[in-house]
Image 1 (cartoon, rainbow, N blue to C red):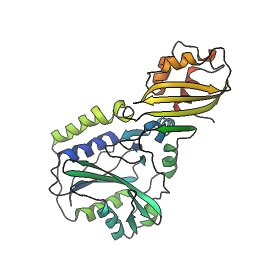
Image 2: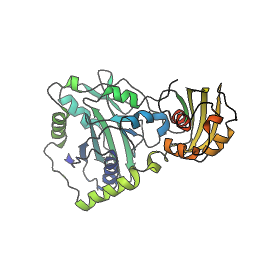
Image 3: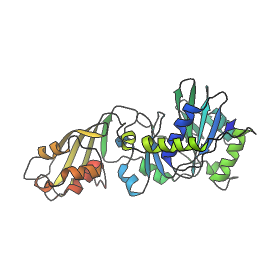
Image 4: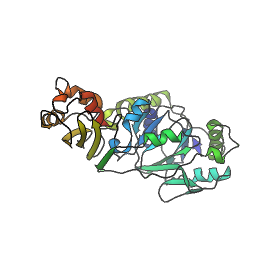
Length: 322
């Protein structure tokens, strides 16, 4: 199979690279490329970012959040995860599963867009059709940090009712334990590439094409509007113990903005919470925007002993303690 090279580890560039190649490659013959991302969570096209990802954990640990052009669930990437993309007509991840079997791993495709080995998920994949061709891309967990994966995708202390697609959680495993002949992901990638290429030629993007990909990354895939604003409508419930007592916030979201807000709980304060709810309607659902909207308002008059930072933490699930 012919191949492209993509050495970028920037998730926004790599999402743009997928879209550009899907729309520009003529697909007379299939083409593939292997790539990696720095630590990041990639959510599906139709997912709600707030219900799929522990955003506080991502921020604290410098993990990027990106949205891809295909459906399916949220996945965690780091540099020990190898991704593949195949573009063409009627393409399938079957060549990847076959390559794993050639390496000695009994890999099999499932009906849920996964590749399983010994009952555990080692790869998830998704597809997108555009005109007369399609993109299939997926993960191959070689030696991924499974603790970070679990924490990044663990949305604790909240309930979410949302339009869109929810992730299906599976028992996952790394391939490293089943492929002891490879000392690292680089050697594994080299072998996989050799099997998939089979001696076929490399296709090159011109410098001006790569510049177009960079502009697409900056102008679309790295933007708040794409990552958060593309989220479907949702009703999110957050609950925490604050100095004033237990506070529960029911937050309605539309395209990443607060469209409704109601507080309840056994908290103590001098004023009802309606004033804060009014202040925050129409505000972006992110911590800095909430703090900006509350500037000049004495939050402690509603939630005794509580400041704006603690309320913003509650709403956005930062340092939740309940």
